[in-house]
Amino acid sequence: MSNFTTLNEFILDRQGDFPFASGELTRLLNDIGVASKIVNKEVRRAGLGNILGKAGNNNIQGEEQQKLDVYANNEFINVFKYGGEVCGIASEENDDFLPFEHPNSRDGKYVVAFDPLDGSSNIDVNVSIGTIFSIYRRISTEGAAHLEDFLQAGTKQVAAGYVIYGSSTMLVYTTGKGVNGFTLEPSIGEFCLSHPNIKMPEDGRLYSFNEGNYNTFSKGLQKYCDWVKEEDPATGRPYSCRYIASMVADIHRNLIKGGVFCYPATAGSPKGKLRLIYECNPMAFIVEQAGGIATTGHERILDIKPSQLHQRVPALMGSKNMVNKVLAMIEQFEKVKVDN
Ligand code: AHG
Ligand code: MN
Ligand code: MN
Image (cartoon, rainbow, N blue to C red; front, side):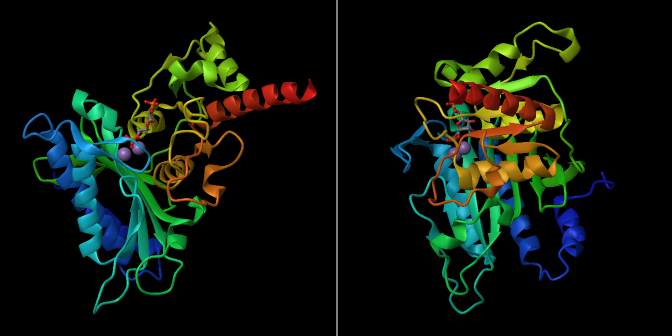
C-alpha cells in the first residue's frame, strides 16, 4: 500500500510541468477528486435510499433528469463554487452557465465545463456511468465568468478527464502531457495511480456504434458496419460490437483495449447527439493524448470553435488505424455521391 502514488501526490509532482503555475490548477484537480468521491459514495449505494429514478424535470435538451444527475450536478457545483479556483461553470444539466462571484477575494482563473453524470439511462440498471470534465483558462479578465470563456476551441483546454463508476471507480485525466489513470482504493478513500501513461492501441477489433440507427447512418458508415462483419482472418474480422451507451465507459474500454467509438448524425439527432463542450472535447483531448484520433468525420473535434453552450457534434474517436479506416470509407462514398 505504501508504494501507491495517490492522485494528490501525483498532481503535486506534476506541478513542475507548468513552470508559471501558482497552484490553482493543482487545487482544482484535487477538488475534482473530492467531488468524484462524494458522487461515487452515492453511486455505490444507488439501489438504496431512494436515489434511483427520475427527478421529475427535464434539462434544456429535453432529456428527463434522473435523481443522480441532479445530485452529481449539485455536488460538483458546490465543490467548484467554494473551491475558489473557477469563476464559473457550465453543465449539461444547467440551461445557462453559472457565473461565480468571489467577493473580497481574487477572481478564479479557470472555468470548468462538465457532464455530471454520463450514461444516465444506465443508472437504474447497474451499468457503468461516468462524469466528464473540461478545464479552460478564462478569456475575460475580471469578475465572474462570461459566455466567451466557455466558447473556446478544445485545443485551449488546460486539462480534461473523466471518472468512470464501473466495476471499480477510476479517474483518468490529462493536462496535455499524456494520460494517467487512478483507481479508487475504497479502504483508504484515495485515488491511486494504476494506469500510468495510457497509450491507446493503434489497432483493435472492437466497434462501438448504436447500430439500431444503421438505417439513418451515412452510406460510408453503413459500409463500414457491413465491412466489420465480414469474415477475414487476416484483419481479425468479424470485429466485436461493444456498445454500453455511456460514452465514458465505451471510450474508456476502447482506450485500454483498442477500438472505435462513433455517434454520428442520425435521423433522430441530425447534428449528432453528443455535446461538444462537455462531452466531445474532453474525451477528444484524452483520446488524442493517448495517441488516438477524434473527429466529426470531417474535421478534428478539438479545432471546432463552439458557437453555443450545448452545441452537438457527430463524434468518431478511437484507435488511429481504425478511425482512419472509417474516414476512408466515409470519403470514398462521399466521392461516389459527388461523381454521380
Ligand atoms: P447523458 O447520459 O449524459 O445524456 O449521455 C448519454 C449519451 C452518451 O453517454 C452515450 O454515448 C449516448 O448518449 C447513448 O445514446 P443512445 O442511447 O442513443 O445510443
Ligand atoms: Mn453524457
Ligand atoms: Mn449527463
